[in-house]
Length: 141
Image 1 (tube, rainbow, N blue to C red):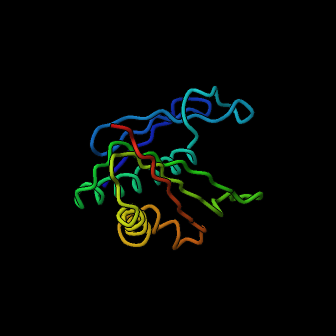
Image 2 (cartoon, rainbow, N blue to C red):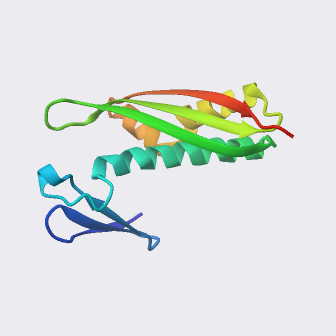
């Protein structure tokens, strides 16, 4: 896997993935940024959410669960001193569908956390306390 990040002046950076997709990252005004993109640490948090949500949806679909929507809401705490690393991250999944089995949703979240989500496992091994929970929303007919 490869990526390229190019400085574009002030606190603005343009990132390009090895697969050819681009993203804008910028710092806050108090750090010389113009608030034109996500912060790099936000990007890391979003990446964790995407990785874990991808797993949960994939596992649910493979187990033939009628998932229609899955959102991951993440909250992170950071150290107060430099380096301001993540110390705690909580992922809350809201899974929507018709007739979802709670045991399958629980299993999907646990498998993502414990076996499949590379980002979550990597951050956990680096000392970040990562917790997960979920709720199931039954959609009407």
